[in-house]
Image 1: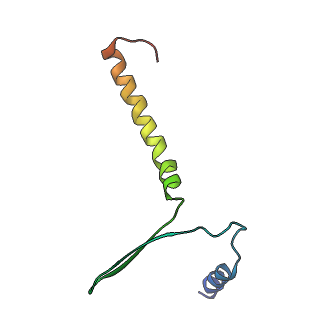
Image 2: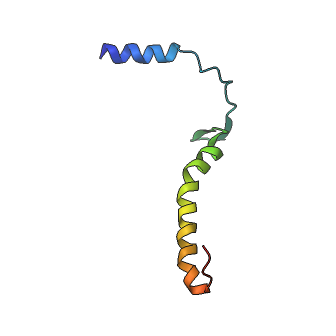
Image 3: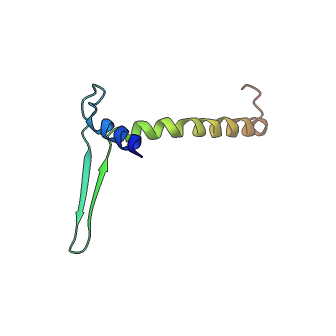
Length: 76
């Protein structure tokens, strides 16, 4: 347990890896009963593209392979 605490404290004290701090987009919704703050990382679109690109390209290749016999073109 103490080792985990020490590791956590060391991580808090550690300096960032030389990268400039990212600017975060903040959207706030304040009403009488609810207060919501949403912070979006500007790198989110890049992260999504990195995760979504391989499955989408695989689906496109499968779709093209399935349509090739129907269209009569034999080129890949």
